Image 1: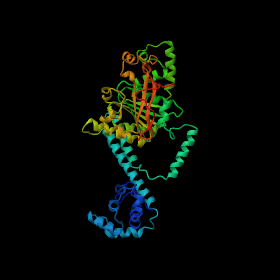
Image 2: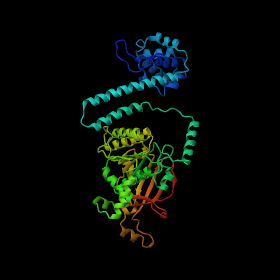
Image 3: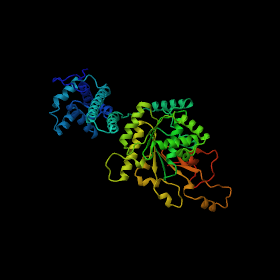
Image 4: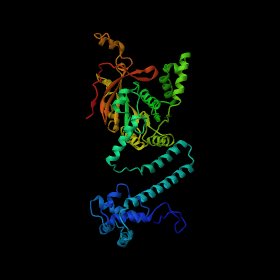
Length: 477
């Protein structure tokens, strides 16, 4: 088979293409009624290099879309309807394609060649655009790199269409995962663990491809919670590699919280440098532990989805990637023009879900809740509190809320309302993580301890018996 990748008659070097493979695909479709089903899901008209071959394939696809027969006569009529029959070579060209075809058995192989060369051409085109961007010499090198990475990512995305997988292969993958789970824990075969016993039991870890939304009213600890997730996952046996995008806080502030969390030293004393000798030892130990964690922070202001995607993909290629955390969703920009903020937030949530699928990692996104919970007699958050933010609830695979009774009830008022229960103490450190949506499992709530001064959430060995939001685990309908 001759592959025309050399110079043309005028001496100009042509991009990668294989005319014989293109003609073999079309001829196979003309003589074999089943061939179109083998190539249509993966091959587009624009994948063909020779324009007249693209026209013929497009005519075949049009007939297929209308459930009409595909043969030399019907394709000729379709080309004539669009005024392209003569430009494509007429009926004689279609007859020659059929006459030259040795067999239609290899149509998938021929289609693979056409698709491969199409990818090479798109890569060359992207490289040319990147060169033009570089030649402009823009001052913001970060923006230039982000645009270049987005162009390369677009080439990759155009070549990631998945086909059917037989159940046998899926069962084997499941068996391999189970066997791996019995030995070394790897993030490739199991979900990323959060370090919280009940949460990991219910969710079976944070699943690859899932969008997990952590939502709360301001000041209830959502940033602290996702920092706990990051630290626990990175420090565990699986050594999860984490990208933490902070649109709200500076990376230095987040690291200070991590130091407080790990050392147990009050974050206020850390901020003002009021350390005792014992604190210094704790801080020194914490710095040694944290410095070895595979956690990467990006606190770029005004971050867009395209920039985040490019940065995350680059990190995945250079160091590997197991988890993305975004703090927080409503402060991001879609990079596209929207009629209102609700539409933009909806576009961001859809893009985050797509990012999780494309990079095959779980994405945790923090989100602010509306004031609706504060206006209700029962302040426990509900999914409806997210609705003003568009499609967050719809796009998320898991939605979890943070609820702290102490944020809504003062100690004096709480003690007055519980005079008949003197043994009960004011829930100053009690917090609940409420799983309000779980696409693939149960919902419900469980208690944890939140030590606000050191920004640390902890499991409880003994949980309180009752709670306004604790109703047990329920299967989501």
